[in-house]
Image 1 (cartoon, rainbow, N blue to C red):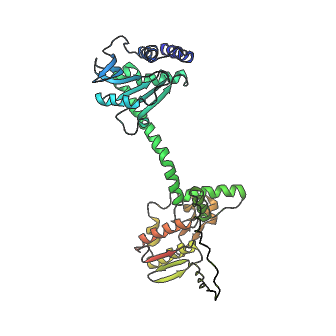
Image 2 (cartoon, rainbow, N blue to C red; image 1 turned 180 degrees about the vertical axis):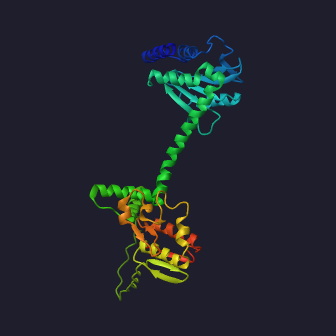
Image 3 (cartoon, helix red, strand yellow; image 1 turned 90 degrees about the vertical axis):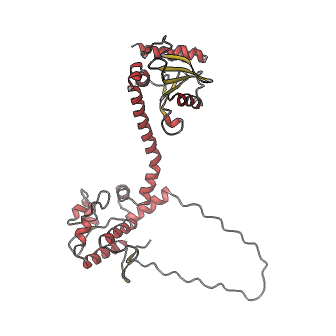
Length: 367
C-alpha cells in the first residue's frame, strides 16, 4: 500500500499548492515515486540527477547498469510541461534512450522517441495523478516505471505494446471517414439494405436501392452551392428586327439496355438489363451460369446467382420473396441492387463470359 499512500499525499500537496517550483516537484514527487517503485533513490549512479549531455542536462537519467541511461525524466514546474517534448526528445536521441518521461508532478507523459509520428503520436500514455483514480495511477506507474520492470525490459515491451495499440486506434479513427465515404461511393449493398430496412420499419414503405444510394451520396457529400451567374452589362435597346435565338433541340430520352457485338437490346430498367445480359451470355455458352456461380466472391454477404432463391439471401425470406427472379436456365438471380451494383455484376459476368466489358458489351442503365 506504500505507492497508493504516496500518490494520495502527493495529490493532496498538489491541490494545496505546496509544490511551487521545479525543485519541489523533483524531490516531493519524482524521487518519492521512484523510491516507491523500487528504485534506489540515493544511488546517484542508478538515478543520475542533472545528467550531462555535452552542453545540456536532463533532470534524471535512470541507469542500468550503473551510469548507462535506459530512460530519461525531464521535470518541469507544475503546469509548465507543455512544449518541452522537443528538448526531451533531443536528449533521448543523443544517447539512444528509448523511454522518455516528461512530468510536472501532476501530469506524466510517457514517450517512445524512436517511434514514428509527431511528438504527440509518440506518446504512449498521459497520466494525470490528480484526475485519475489511484488504482489507475498505480497500474500505469508500475507498468512503465517500476524498477524491476525497466531493468528486465518488461516495461519497454509494455510501452511498445501500448504504443502499437494507440497507433492502431489512431489509424482506425483517421481511416473511418475514408471507409465511410468509400462505402457510400461504392453503394455497398449491405449498407443500402440496412438503411432501406430501417426506413421500412419506420414508415412501412421500403425504398429501392437507387433511392437509398442517392440519399447517402447527397447526405455525405452535399453538392456545392451553384456558382453565381456573371452579370451582363445593360445594353441600350436597338430598334429594328429582333434576332430570334435558335431553339435548342429537345434532348432525346436516355435509352436503357445493352449493346453486344453491335446489336442493341432494349430493356425497361437496369434490373431488366442485368437479366437480359445473363440470359444472352447463357445462350452463348450454357456453362456460363455454373462458372459465374462458382466465383469465390459475389457480394459481401450475398450470392448474385444460385440454384435456389434461399441461397441468394440467407435468412431473409422477405428479400427472397420480393427480389428473386428465376432465369430460363433454372438459375435464380438476386435483383435487390442499385444501378452501380448492377453495373459491377454485369462486368463480372462479362469477365466470366470472355466478353470485353465496355467494348464488346456496353450497358446503358439509365439514371
